[in-house]
Image 1 (cartoon, rainbow, N blue to C red):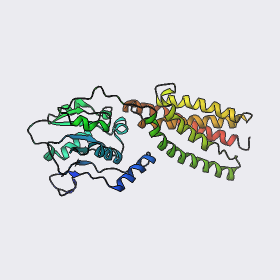
Image 2 (tube, helix red, strand yellow; image 1 turned 60 degrees about the vertical axis):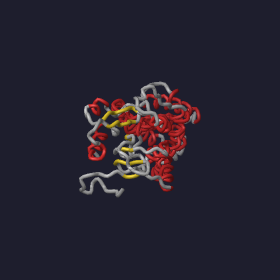
Image 3 (cartoon, helix red, strand yellow; image 1 turned 120 degrees about the vertical axis):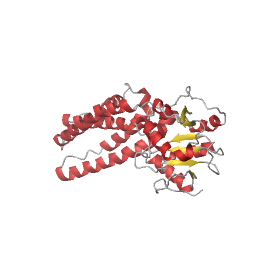
Image 4 (cartoon, rainbow, N blue to C red; image 1 turned 90 degrees about the vertical axis):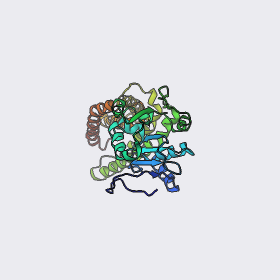
Length: 330
């Protein structure tokens, strides 16, 4: 089937076959290691996974994060399925749903783009939604459209093939998502990679400040920042508090105590610098981690960021003040 762009002025937006190349696998690895950078994406649209487009094959909604679509393709083979890839700005399902980008509006917009192909007018089309999208999708809005029948699919892509082989499709209401050590370890490496970059930049800034103002080179901020980035995902379920930022404050308290013990005998301003810096960094890390956890909720995240991001900025300002006050101190 000839591929035509949905923006080319044609009356129909034609479906395209989704094929995975060796380059795609390299891109998937890059997406994982540099998870917080601009990711490789799939162009939003209608795709199929088999040899040809079949309007009777299952219609699955997914994000346009390349890694997710590649995983779906691999999990579905050799089944033929249709993939409705919506624009989530290159963010995966649970993160984009938690941030309000995997939404009912995006789904309906993309369905309408391909309405001449998807809807044959005979009966409602079953629309299989990933369960992790429900924090951003309002089923009530989708059900208002009588052309579709939304169904809640499995949590994990590995379960999708077995699910599709046994119609009629039912809501996977009993599926539960795991966020155990394995899942948290998966997020740990890109989190550490991201904050290692930030930590090195802050270390370079501290080095330059020492050259210019003789403030003393506080290189310890680099390993401390990396330690926070590694400890937060590992200890996430054990840290006190329900809010991400509160968990970050709990971690900051523990790391601050350990740091003060390691530098005992130092001046008060220098100790205050490390404590304020650690608390600021822990809160910032915690807020950035909201998209990594299936326990997040879009409305709660917005409130939490509004409350705690100013606190993180304020603490960074305080740490800079103490940084200059403590210059030359041991």
